[in-house]
Each structure stands twice: as structure tokens, then as C-alpha cells.
Length: 166
View 1 (cartoon, rainbow, N blue to C red):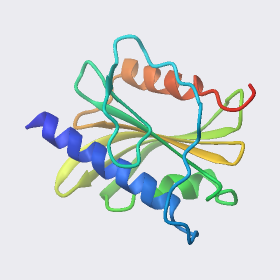
View 2: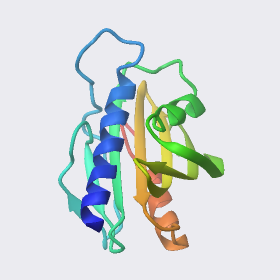
View 3: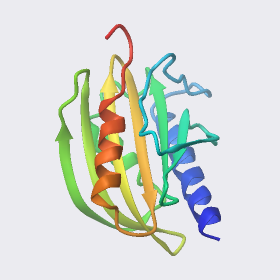
């Protein structure tokens, strides 16, 4: 049951991440970033991406992380607006922490929050990064509070992002 809930949550985030990229555009297909690199922690298992997600991981705790990219769609939107688009469909949203992320490329925003989806309480770590005309959405989904190690590993994954010539 736990796995089903997390897969459902992962699908919801992948759907909304891809769907949000469609706002403000008449195109039907999301253009994903090509050839970007991530370095996940060694103890994370690669999972099959679903929906519009580019990458998915299962953590030892059973929590899930998804990464989605979209290019040439949201150039003018700020990071807070892009983050709020990821929250479409969630209820009882309570932001715990929101902070800008120093990155070697582009700019990023990390948001840690509590919410519910179809009555299921969730704890989320979200990071939105803009690099060279592309937006990268990182989502960490959990049913329980995030451990400091999970949060640290998640932020390390986000900071490992390399895209373009860097």
C-alpha cells in the first residue's frame, strides 16, 4: 500500500510538472532538456520515470524523488511562481521552509512543505532551477517528516545538476 501511495504521488507530480510547463504555450509537447547530468547518492535506486518525468529515484526509506525538465516555456516566470505551479491539486499546503539555492549554473529555489493529496498527508521537498532557458523541477515526496540526511542528499542532487557547456 505504501508503495502504491508513493507511486501515485510520483505520478501526480510528474503529471503536474509536465502539465505546468504547458501553461502559456500553444505547443502540445514538452521539450525536455537533453544531455543533462545528475549525480544521485549511491544508496538511491533508479526507478522508471513516469509521465513527463525525466528521472526518478527510490530512496532507502521508500520515499521518491522525481526530476522533470522543460525548455523554452517559462523563461519569464520567477522561481516562486514555478514552484507554486507544482502545487496544483494539493490541499492544506503549509510551507515549512523556502530558501534560495546557490548554484554554479543558473538559480534555484528550495521549498519544504506539508500538504495533502486526495486526503493523504504528504511532506514535500521541491527545488526549481532555471538554467539556459530550461526549468528543472525536483520533487521529494514522503508520508512522514523528511530526515536531515534525506534533505541533505536531495539538495546535493539538485546542486549536482550540470547542463550545457559547464
